[in-house]
Image 1: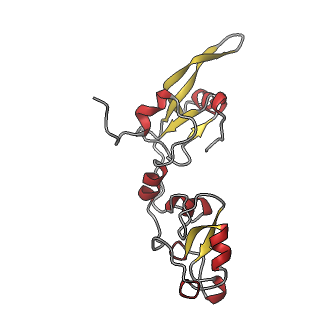
Image 2: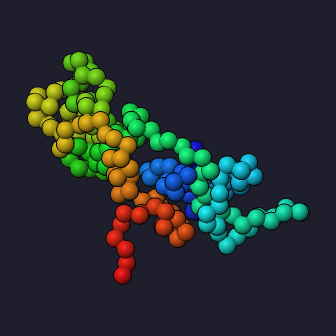
Length: 185
C-alpha cells in the first residue's frame, strides 16, 4: 500500500518485520490515518513518532512516523513488467539521448516487425527520440540504446530507487532508509 502523501500530511514510513522498507521507489508510505488503524488492528509496531498527537474524547496517541509490520512480508523475487519499472531500470533517462523529460517507452524491434513487449525489447525513450525512431529498427534509424535492455532483479530496482529520494524525508526515517551509506565521523 503506497499513499501519495503531501509534506504536511504526516506520512508514515512502513518497514517490513526485518526493519527494511517494503520498497524504496516509490518509498513505502502510509497516511497517518492508515498507520493508526494498523496500530489498533495490532498489525504494526510504532518505531518512531512525530511530536504531534491526535485525540478523541477518551484517548490520545502520538502520530507515528515509522512503523514496522508485525509479520514479515516476503518480497517478490521477480519485479512486475510495468512502465514505471522500465523507467526505474533505465534510471528515468532516455536511452537514446539522455533526456529526463517527456519519457515514454520504445520497442527496440518495433511490434510491427515482430518485436515483443518484454524487458529485453523495451527501453525508456523521450517522445522526440521515440518519434524520430518511429517504426524502424535500430540499424535503420541509426539509433541504438545506451544500454542493452534486460530483465532487472528486485535488488537492482531497489538500488536504482535509492538514487531518487522522495521530495520529503522526515529525520526519523533516515536511520531506516540508507543503512549502506557512509557514516559521518
